[in-house]
Image 1 (tube, rainbow, N blue to C red):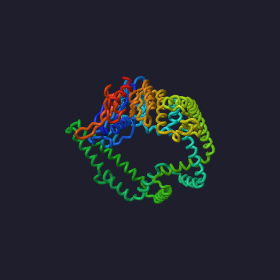
Image 2: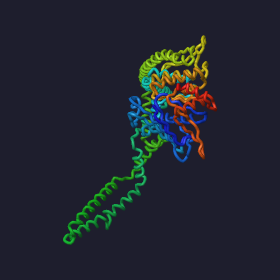
Image 3: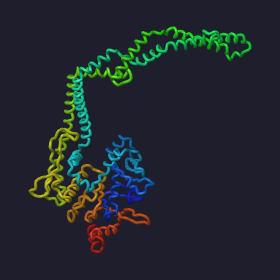
Image 4: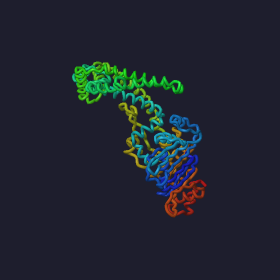
Length: 552
């Protein structure tokens, strides 16, 4: 259940802490007192959209934190474990923070989470039903969701969505392959011509760089030879070359062996340097011998490069490796054309198999929907009867459709509220009060089957009065025997049924107006009900009526 709610720096709330109880909790207050503000803050815990306009003081963040007491909740534990979220067997703490810059952060048990993760966890803990949801009753998606939840189809639907996506991907691949083959067949002659051009030149990976380097050498042979000659003159060939000077130095150091300290190894180090210089000189000499100015070789290289450059320009690339990739891709396209019949046959086989599997899963879901539709319609009539809907007729119509992301069913709730009235969609036949009573009846069924820890009713009794209001209060009271119920109401008949009663009110200080909430004592509760009964003034007759409603 929702154990406590903390709200700070949110709209008209500076700092507010509320402790709730098990059973039936009533929240009342004058219009504009701030009941909707509290509910709006709570909706952020369910992953609702954050707006910086709600931040009261722009110099600090807004914080909403809800603490739920939990016990033996394996499905919620699995969600937390799967998402690496801290788990506590007794409490689940949801927190939302909104910074002045608009940045929003969410936490579950102090573990940072995404809004979708927060929402997935929150809907396992609390359901908020408002007048806005009454409008959803006419939505086919909402109707389908009700039946699926009651039929226990959630796990089946998760598996089905995965199978359906695999089927869609297979069909998409088949269509794309067909289009590609059709285009390939139309362009086959040109594709073969392009491939022949690329195969004729017999490209080798990395050859462009090698050819350009060889061209650079052959084009600058005179300059290179002159530089090599200069280097060899300095190292070995000149009158005063490095190698002869090093040899003299080695001889001189040998003559000084008795003078020089052995540990410096000067003679050996000079000899090593002399050997290294000699090796370098021999390498340069060998390189010089191998370099020959060959105009024919240069012409061949230029011709080869021109062919490569021409193909690169044609295909709008800049390297041989890219040309090779194009060549290989052209070959694959032609292979695909040559093997197109077999490829299409295999993809069609995969699509048929995927369809068979997903259809089987859809039929299983449909079977449970049809079974639930019959029992739900019967149960809904029973639950709505005490709410003055004695002539209610209900049918959950299931129509087969082409396979889709939701299955093979179209679901439509049909109602008649009067004798001899034709069954019609709820949006075409129900008044606001009738829809409110229908939704309350549906929520009682959902609460029984889904076993939510907490449910919040936000003025779902709008548009009703008298005995019907009393019956709605009794229905909420009945739900509260199994789960925690919080009801925001303007009706004294409903408010009197609560185990605990909270009042939302405004309070002025020197600089601002603030929203407050307090849990009422018995006498305060009598006065609040009396005010709700009589209007602007409280008299003894109203108090007596309030005590009668409270059975005290």
